[in-house]
Image (cartoon, rainbow, N blue to C red):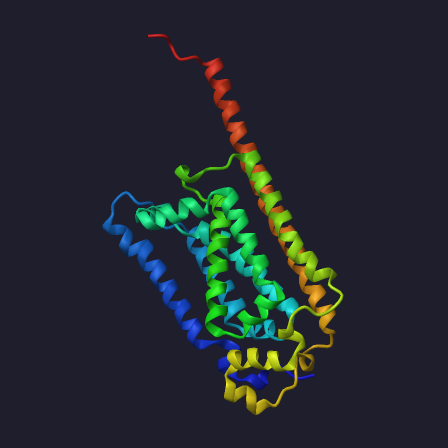
Length: 301
């Protein structure tokens, strides 16, 4: 069985992408520290927010810049793990890493605010995110996107953006954007899980390989040429992804669907626990407030 070392350092570790992420990280800390001082009254960056942003950048590099990205072109189950991290883990971490005053500055731009208000409406956010995710995994669409560098990059960015829209009603910390109550958040999470199920079920229960990207040597060659460079790939004289895995194509495909569903259920379970905890905490605070008002009524003037 071949190893990934044959593709070279540049293909494995994406130094240019790493440079972009480092620049974004520097920009984030400059914006949230130096720039904040120009506008007195904005809350300082907390250690938690800084740590969450660093975590989101590390995860993004791990799935898009490390050898894991190359593996996603060789094995479908790695691709599905990559997608799960991209749309189910990084977006909520990213949302919580941005201070409220930065979101307020961003949303003070009318066009951005209008787009945000429209696409973060709960029903629209659910339909758009799950619709685009499912559409991406239609075999014909998937194979076409994977063979075009700009389509692949653009669709990945689009999925990340709509994932932010999807997570926003659940996790944003801005009072004016709190559109869902505790019970509605629970329903929102369950609806999200249900809408993602058909795409996973189609992949899991298919009797044959759905994606030419992983089963057709010609299509796979086109995809890999974009990933590692045409001249580099041509010099390796590889016949297909089976050289890198002991699993059959159908087993790989089914494992990908199962992993996506399991990861989704775990993440939604964690978020559901967070929602219940917040709901309980607010209910307790309200009960204590009402009790204090009953025991210590305000004097009548």
